Image (tube, rainbow, N blue to C red):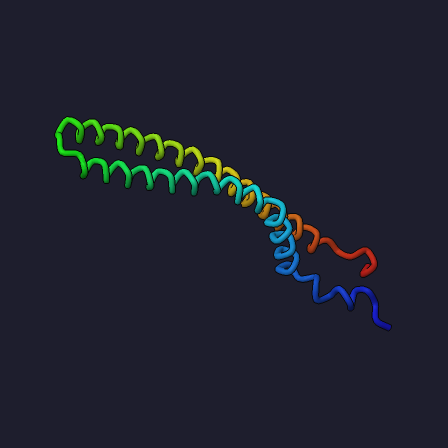
Length: 122
Protein backbone atom coordinates (compact mmCIF):
# COMPACT_ATOMS: atom_id res chain seq x y z
CA UNK A 1 0.00 0.00 0.00
CA UNK A 2 1.31 3.45 -0.93
CA UNK A 3 1.43 5.84 2.00
CA UNK A 4 1.37 9.63 2.04
CA UNK A 5 5.06 9.58 2.87
CA UNK A 6 5.81 7.86 -0.46
CA UNK A 7 3.83 10.51 -2.34
CA UNK A 8 5.47 13.57 -0.75
CA UNK A 9 9.00 12.09 -0.59
CA UNK A 10 10.21 13.89 -3.77
CA UNK A 11 9.07 17.19 -2.25
CA UNK A 12 10.80 16.67 1.09
CA UNK A 13 14.27 17.80 0.09
CA UNK A 14 15.65 20.89 1.75
CA UNK A 15 16.56 22.55 -1.56
CA UNK A 16 13.00 22.17 -2.84
CA UNK A 17 11.58 23.72 0.32
CA UNK A 18 14.09 26.57 0.20
CA UNK A 19 13.17 27.15 -3.44
CA UNK A 20 9.48 27.31 -2.58
CA UNK A 21 10.23 29.70 0.30
CA UNK A 22 12.37 31.98 -1.86
CA UNK A 23 9.71 31.98 -4.56
CA UNK A 24 7.06 32.92 -1.99
CA UNK A 25 9.20 35.71 -0.55
CA UNK A 26 9.99 37.01 -4.02
CA UNK A 27 6.30 37.01 -4.85
CA UNK A 28 5.56 39.00 -1.69
CA UNK A 29 8.53 41.39 -1.68
CA UNK A 30 9.21 41.63 -5.43
CA UNK A 31 6.61 44.33 -6.17
CA UNK A 32 7.94 46.47 -3.29
CA UNK A 33 11.49 46.13 -4.58
CA UNK A 34 10.37 46.97 -8.13
CA UNK A 35 8.55 50.07 -6.93
CA UNK A 36 11.54 51.23 -4.88
CA UNK A 37 13.89 50.85 -7.86
CA UNK A 38 11.58 52.68 -10.30
CA UNK A 39 12.21 56.20 -8.88
CA UNK A 40 15.93 55.47 -8.92
CA UNK A 41 15.83 54.68 -12.63
CA UNK A 42 13.61 57.68 -13.41
CA UNK A 43 15.85 60.10 -11.49
CA UNK A 44 18.94 58.67 -13.11
CA UNK A 45 17.45 59.13 -16.57
CA UNK A 46 16.31 62.67 -15.74
CA UNK A 47 19.77 63.52 -14.45
CA UNK A 48 21.45 62.27 -17.60
CA UNK A 49 18.99 64.16 -19.80
CA UNK A 50 19.52 67.36 -17.79
CA UNK A 51 23.27 66.92 -18.00
CA UNK A 52 23.04 66.51 -21.79
CA UNK A 53 20.87 69.61 -22.07
CA UNK A 54 23.23 71.68 -19.95
CA UNK A 55 26.21 70.47 -21.95
CA UNK A 56 24.50 71.41 -25.20
CA UNK A 57 23.70 74.87 -23.79
CA UNK A 58 27.27 75.25 -22.61
CA UNK A 59 28.66 74.47 -26.04
CA UNK A 60 26.16 76.78 -27.76
CA UNK A 61 26.88 79.80 -25.52
CA UNK A 62 29.61 82.16 -26.69
CA UNK A 63 30.42 84.26 -23.62
CA UNK A 64 32.67 83.07 -20.80
CA UNK A 65 30.36 84.41 -18.08
CA UNK A 66 27.40 82.45 -19.35
CA UNK A 67 29.56 79.35 -19.61
CA UNK A 68 30.71 79.69 -16.01
CA UNK A 69 27.15 80.22 -14.82
CA UNK A 70 25.98 77.18 -16.76
CA UNK A 71 28.82 75.10 -15.36
CA UNK A 72 27.81 76.08 -11.82
CA UNK A 73 24.16 75.22 -12.48
CA UNK A 74 25.17 71.92 -14.04
CA UNK A 75 27.33 71.06 -11.06
CA UNK A 76 24.53 71.92 -8.64
CA UNK A 77 22.00 69.85 -10.60
CA UNK A 78 24.41 66.92 -10.79
CA UNK A 79 25.10 67.08 -7.06
CA UNK A 80 21.38 67.11 -6.29
CA UNK A 81 20.77 64.14 -8.59
CA UNK A 82 23.62 62.20 -7.00
CA UNK A 83 22.21 62.89 -3.52
CA UNK A 84 18.76 61.70 -4.57
CA UNK A 85 20.23 58.57 -6.15
CA UNK A 86 22.15 57.81 -2.94
CA UNK A 87 18.95 58.13 -0.90
CA UNK A 88 17.10 55.79 -3.25
CA UNK A 89 20.00 53.35 -3.12
CA UNK A 90 19.85 53.33 0.69
CA UNK A 91 16.14 52.49 0.59
CA UNK A 92 16.74 49.70 -1.94
CA UNK A 93 19.62 48.33 0.14
CA UNK A 94 17.38 48.21 3.21
CA UNK A 95 14.74 46.24 1.31
CA UNK A 96 17.38 43.85 -0.03
CA UNK A 97 18.75 43.27 3.49
CA UNK A 98 15.25 42.52 4.76
CA UNK A 99 14.78 40.02 1.93
CA UNK A 100 18.15 38.40 2.70
CA UNK A 101 17.26 38.10 6.39
CA UNK A 102 13.86 36.61 5.55
CA UNK A 103 15.44 34.01 3.27
CA UNK A 104 18.03 33.11 5.92
CA UNK A 105 15.30 32.81 8.55
CA UNK A 106 13.23 30.62 6.25
CA UNK A 107 16.24 28.41 5.53
CA UNK A 108 16.93 28.01 9.26
CA UNK A 109 13.30 27.12 9.92
CA UNK A 110 13.29 24.55 7.14
CA UNK A 111 16.52 23.01 8.47
CA UNK A 112 15.06 22.87 11.97
CA UNK A 113 11.88 21.21 10.73
CA UNK A 114 13.85 18.72 8.65
CA UNK A 115 15.96 17.70 11.66
CA UNK A 116 12.82 17.07 13.69
CA UNK A 117 11.85 13.42 13.59
CA UNK A 118 8.44 12.32 12.38
CA UNK A 119 6.46 11.08 15.45
CA UNK A 120 5.10 8.14 13.41
CA UNK A 121 8.62 6.83 12.68
CA UNK A 122 9.18 6.17 16.35
